[in-house]
Length: 390
Image (cartoon, rainbow, N blue to C red; front, side):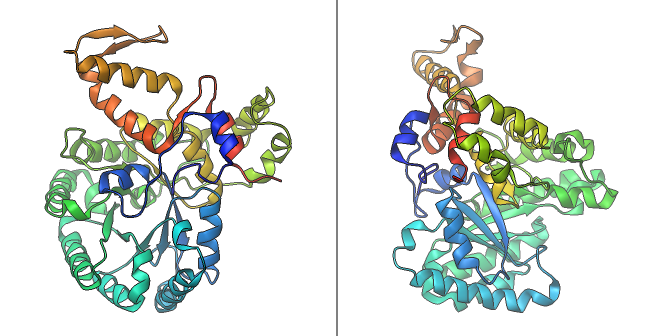
């Protein structure tokens, strides 16, 4: 699989200076963590789950979470588990589906579900990449990770964990530091199994009766912004000790696909793409666009998504611009020569080699997986090309 692999080859050639590289579910953990992109959540109770997975993969989704936790009623958990087993069996039986299936994760409620589901999935566990672990702390997380180790040994399948940081202990100021250090100890001990850390911002808002409006980002809610900053401070460092921390969910959606149909009847590479930019800003999408940019500025990678229309937006904004790529490549080239300061090739900024090295390394990793846009190609053209045709 690869990002933007659902686009025609000639479209990718028009869009990209360097196209995204391919990866598989068996790629190194560092590659998969950076490649998650927009991770689409779906309730595990959906009767059409196998069809949904293949449909979304054909539209560019590369990672999905099938949820047995907050997205379904407590009474529906047994039915959701049974449905997952059926849907995995159906996926495994689809001719040619194996190469079209995105990275699949199951969000569980209890450690016992991990070992039970892996046993019930049988050979179809080969389609599973791992599990999402809710309300993760040191105390609650160890049993989940031990269960994952047992399931991995029993199945012979490499399985990853994505802990969700959303507990009240992490939110409350008096317990935050201790909780963060406990989480850090736990995920470091099980580092080879932890793919990425996810933020549960909706749960952070709940104890205070808060909900951000469509025009606001998570960073406008100061309590939430403070937690994100502390999580990145302790767990997202770029010195080799940190983990990929993913961006929070965006709760609002409209039928953007329908909204953009008039623009898509024309070439996305024409001046009319400016109409698309205006449509984005006028239809409550400004908040999402700003939040994605702020995610990256604050050290987060990828994003949790609860609606398919968010996926192409996240991915379009994940592509490395030609300017970013040029700066990053120049910085790393100069770093091998001993450091110093150099003017950007775009002559609009200073690139200080040693302080900007970690940024350059992260940018080139993103460039490998999401590609580098051609000079003059913006997220507008990338988004327009990614939306389904009328």
